[in-house]
View: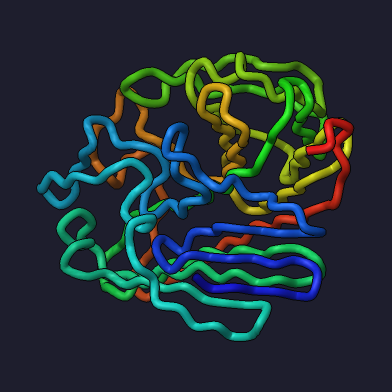
Length: 289
């Protein structure tokens, strides 16, 4: 476990999956601590895909490959370089195991930095091969939301017509559903998650704030990420707020990796990096939790 501290925020990150495991401010833990009876995960890092592949497979270069939900990064042991008490860099490279499911030569890094009172998380991927490399990455931070239903809300930085990508058992549908019209805030209720996840496409906002009884608790900025996903298990006391730069397979996907909706491409020797920023606020729920 790697620890960062800036005198205000205390952060812990696991070497396995470069997964954020704890953020403490003012004695309060902000990160979901996992529960085998509900969901044992916390904040998995998604690479080289976001979401699932239809039938768990894709085709590339005339071959069929299998890959599990969200890719393999979350199960890999990352090497770590602790730059300072406020920064650490976690890195994996392709190996025999990754090439069996993803035939590209890469370096993928996750950098955690405490800076200016917030946690800065940068994902970077470098194509160390000569051929184009197809990829996506995304975050899956899960925040504690104890209390009665209706206590927690999510506020967008801009007024939005909140349009959801419809989901089916086979993937993302071509249809959409209008969740809310001309709104800035949504109450986090279990009824929102009847289709599992909420997948937002075309948001103007690049910042959302999780609030408890009207008080800011966590603010997430995701300047260059195309999509935002919200997810929680039924009646679970957490909310996952997930900036992604790709999507799960469409239900009518061709199965070719290069044609996957939202997939990104890096030329040989190229690098892609994106950062999202998380700010934590001290708050006092009336429930006392």
